[in-house]
Length: 419
Ligand SMILES: [Zn+2]
Image (tube, rainbow, N blue to C red; front, side, top):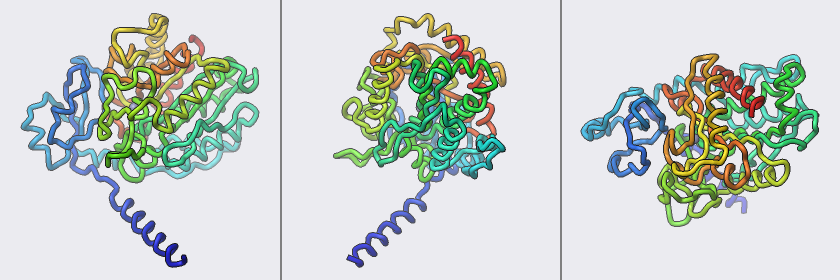
């Protein structure tokens, strides 16, 4: 038995070393922006090129897709004559410039972690500690919550805030961050909103009104397994880390796994695809947990606003994503609000945000969270917001965390007061 323990320790140690040794390098990868048609079934165009698909954005000439090309394939990529613009000549250097994961900050005189939290990105365990610290300085108006458990067994945690009506007395504002692992800015911005709500409740009448009118349920990292993997092994990981039978491919796109529009265009049944939907709706532990969580909110006080936080197209996405031919009944009101919110977001730093039904303004995406919230959870405003930046992509320099938080905070205050 001792021998067995010793052997398993040795094997564990071996794998541990192996996994830390194989952290992916993107040195010499070049990033290109290419024009694409409105459809998303273009993987055949990249046949034989092991490119990494990054994000889409909407420019003057239509929808574009950013891709990273490994150094050994630059000539082969060039030979295909894509209409391509070079965005970065070394993705590995961009990742270095993003900065190392930061230390946990000191506490200020009120016992709150200092704002320097937003000067760098952070390890998963530090995020969990940060949520607990925010709760501890707002004990009578908040609680830590858990929506379920990820594939690898991590709790999907977050924080619930309320105002003078008491716990669970008002319609829900429900935020999910980091459903896509590599979109690190999303959890940071969601935490900035939490920080501002908690520290301004006593002194700012607009903040007080928001918390008095709504119960806020905020899950900053709903894909913890993917998030950890993006920090330890592969910076550009998107999906969860679910292992499936009969394939060596790992990971399902949680934002294609929801029951509304499941399996349609803009999702893939191929387990190796970045938009793999899963084999059946809700068959990821993360999505199943969030469905249950949303249904509980819907059955209780209802959901006023849902925002799924993404990066980096700089767009407010409304329903629907799964179809371009149908719209929610209140779409005119939603477009007005999104337009006004985008104008407020632009004020501090001139960051432009587009807005509109996702299928129309960006691309078709079936089985996404906001469509589910709109159609199956009675949500009045089921939105997705893609944060900055169309210039830097997923690897956003850490000195843009605070500006990103500040512009979104302004937009959210407007939205909460006017929705
Ligand atoms: Zn995303």
